[in-house]
Length: 339
Image (cartoon, rainbow, N blue to C red; front, side, top):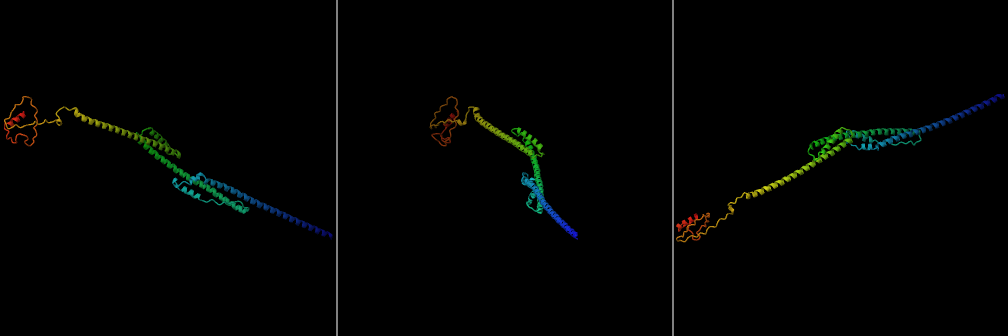
């Protein structure tokens, strides 16, 4: 009977040992599982932090590219271009509109929760996409505006040069024979030939340089034309002065000749203004006696004296008007004077 009792005790001990072993195994497994879980959670958190950090790095690069663009000289120059400076004003409007978009808010990775990290990582990736997209968009807008400006500038410059060439040709033709120095026209022709080769070119600077050279050459020709006009005017004034002096001298000489000519052709003759009439002889009327008549000498007759002017009265003892009281005496006296 003692044998079965020992067997029971032995089996009981084995069961207990198995149970204890099983519990130990379970405990160990649980510990291992917990350790594995904790390790996995830690690993996932670490991975989440790493992913968030990497996303933040990509965002930082995108931000730097965007900031470099909007702070660059090309962008600053483009936003100053007006609608009048481009052919199509839409490019200016588009650049202004895209530049007004606000940048996204900052998101950090300084959290210890895997879920929060994953959410922030997603937001960071979204922001990175915004910066990358807007960088490309604004860069394209800037290039479109600059291109539109350059295209209009080129066309305007070409048109300005074409007009300048037309004006220069007119000046070249019109100035023929009217310049003081014909070398100025030769220089203008040289610049005209050079400008003609550049009028359809694409280099704005060369076209503008050609226009500037034409301006200088045209100014030189105009100055030469003005110099010749001034010289011609001065020469004309000098010629007019000489002609006036010669005419004045000729007139003075003619007047002098007209004054002297009568003296040179004058023949001494009787000149009425210099003639002085001889005084009338003092006539004394004879007394009323027989007159003493004396015959005239046989000499050359003297020039007849002009009759004495009548005094209108009987001065002295002359004949009485009407011939009364004269008789033969009057006749004799008259005959004497007649001779």
